Length: 228
Image (cartoon, rainbow, N blue to C red; front, side, top):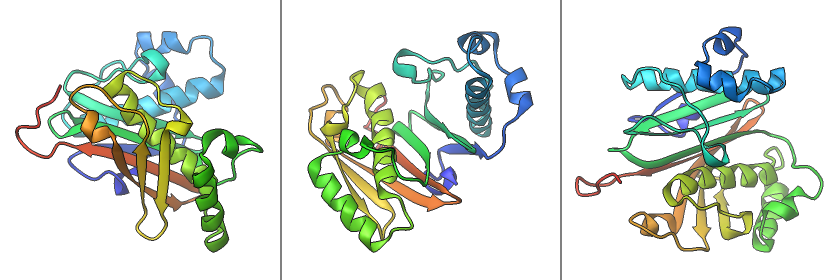
């Protein structure tokens, strides 16, 4: 599923099933992070890292521990960028080389409405107007959940490049229901060499198998566009 949104040269892997072997395969430093977690949390943590290692293996990168850093973002091996996501019944990871990508961000959510009051918390007034219009025309997609997922994918790209958290009201998302794309207009400037590339961030989405999935891939465009 996620490979439909971020094709090669990135590598993606996903699973719909929990794996007991994934828990046993955790590196000691990974297992230590979830040693006191409830079984459900430990399983999600292990499954998504299993997906990440499968994606890395497809790129010829050996398995390493993937421990979370600040704000929970995984620390990828030198030369790689990537993203992980998990929700009920689905785990996925995508990995790419820094020579190809500035950043990657993915998010998966159940195709269900957000809880009461959450849309107002995560959205701008103009986004809510657009969500109501989309819901009236295509109610089979829970557009409020898709909006939330798109913001999560944008944030997962933004944070590693800026080391600054992005609030929900700082990204205005426009969803194209026909093209399966979305565009984020970011209201705050990003300092450094990636600033220009983070003003407007484009992504893709799909709704399938009871899920909404979003992805952002910031590609490098030419040989002079060197990695940081």
